[in-house]
Length: 455
Image 1 (spheres, rainbow, N blue to C red):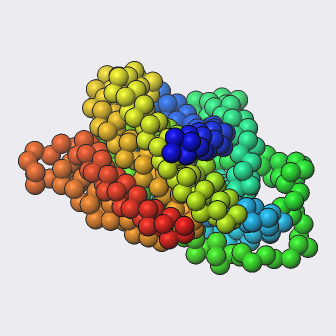
Image 2 (cartoon, helix red, strand yellow):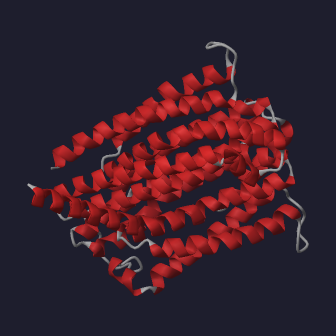
Image 3 (cartoon, helix red, strand yellow):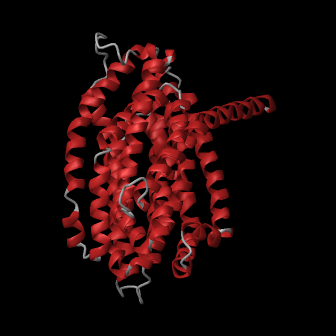
């Protein structure tokens, strides 16, 4: 009995090390990617609260579009992981190429949406100055969508193979590029006009094309990727195709869209309350997104490890990955929540020197701390389910948690007197805590059912 327990503990430790080793470069890549939004927020905030609010409101449209495309293409990761685990690595490159064909209509549609977003701001009664900045920001960043799609496809191909370092290196390279181009466009250097918050959109587009070029060069030049046959156009198609990519990817994309669009709606609902409220909400949201990269990266690692295990016909190993991954996510979320509670004032001060904005943001950051644990658990469970190629039920769960429970509750708390005096942005963050807790319970139960069935 003691020997069995020791063996089990040893397996847990081995899997924990493997997950962390895989998640670490993914985390670095995610933080580098998220830092683009962080840099935009900080540099726009140094211009004015109006520029910060314009980037925030524009981001409330851009981020759902970004995540929808990302989610659809994210289906490539478990598909590649299972093929690689089953010894069919030669089929992964042609699969990724079919992903490029699948993404073209999505990119065209989303570019049209971003180019014509002003009607949304008019409908939502966004302040005219904020609306102008947000609309022009979206027009600028829309030209980066094709590069974004190619980069994500190649990154998901690489990570599905368990090769996460290239995207990390490229992500780190993108940070100084983005900062430099932001500085030139926002403040008007090297003969360019000072664009303020709009300059963030053009800087992001240039950065995305640089990242795309670097990823293409990586797949072409590094020998490890030759086995994928990505550039071998004569390679015959494997069993996995574009139709399956869409069947798996669209539910993931819509789940991320549903999840992120609630934040978009919150920003738009808060916009009539003025630039100070919007700016404070944006600070909390941006910080939350940065912290979220930790459990998100671990969830990607869980997806890959579960996919490899299922491809190798080892369901018991997949169950071990689930347990260890969710445990790591819960522990890390507890630590980041504690950090947020202790340093809320200092965190808000990084983004702005405006005392009024800082005071509002501190209260929101306290609420965000309680939001992090359930968020970490639900994203870990969702990552494990992706590894099993289970994506439709998680979409239904997310819709219930966010739009059936979260949004109505948040709106009533924040902007109506249904529960008493309206409490503004705090009401939405309270509802997010409740909605995420529901999602964590339902996704955890779904994972338990799926893993037992596969076992």
